[in-house]
Amino acid sequence: MEQSEQFGGCACGKVRYKVSGSPTWTAGCCCRDCAKATGTPYVTWVGFPVSNVEFLQEQPAQKETSTGVLRGYCDTCGSSLTYGRDPKFDVSDPLLYVSAASLDDPDMFPPTEVVWYAQRPNWFELAGTIPLHDSVSPDQAERAYNSAKDRQ
Ligand SMILES: [Zn+2]
Ligand SMILES: [Zn+2]
Image (tube, rainbow, N blue to C red; front, side, top):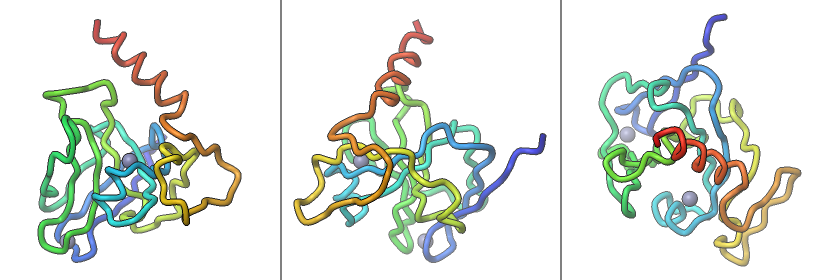
């Protein structure tokens, strides 16, 4: 079966990427770190195995926004693009996440759940049918546990 490919990138077009196959995990995040990094109270992250994300022109600039967390952005237009763990510090979640909003087709991978909902501002409410977790989701915790176990 041919793997599906989707494309995305920043607002100015300097950073373009291709993602292959189906995402491992797609979730909305309302954490304060994402809010500070993106300037919005809600962002949807689409997580792929690192090898399924290919940058086609320039690599995104990266900033460590908390210990072991690398966020990718375009250093020309400032678009927030990716979230990932620095493998030097922590590979318990070895996915690279692209923001759903940066995909050329932002409808492609809808979130299946929302994490850190308790950290949203009081004036912000999500309506819908997907689970809203106050902190991490049970699936996320289990994946981190299994991945840590695999490395032992
Ligand atoms: Zn740009
Ligand atoms: Zn977050």
